[in-house]
Length: 150
Image (tube, rainbow, N blue to C red; front, top):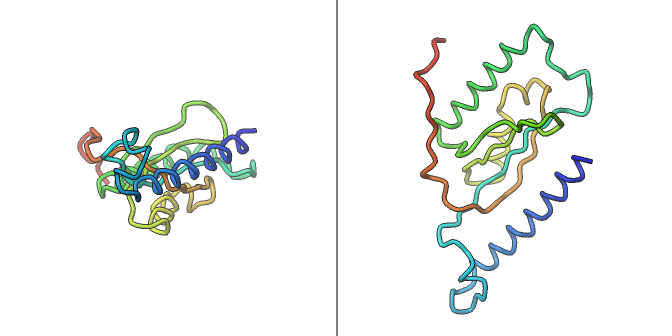
């Protein structure tokens, strides 16, 4: 049920994205939607981080902390590089585990960033990446503590 919902949301997001691109491409005097569109809208990519369908991909209890440290270190590295502009966990238990908004120049770059997560590379999680349009997120700031010792 959740997968169908995610698929429907992705389809709706793609339609909205297409409509916004078409609306932004028109000259303001010709575009009847111009008064309703934020002037600071920008393209981003939505990264959906999900559990795999196979139950055998669950993290072993004794290794969860180490894997989460690797996962969170990767997230921090992408935030510090300016690739993740928003990121966080989904707090409801289910297939969808987290989301990120990625700033990238192409779908391929966004997919590389999303797929670089150690939990994705290890096969424990999978990702979907979708183009989206959002208001400019450049003013979003993360407040990390001093870097952890390696």
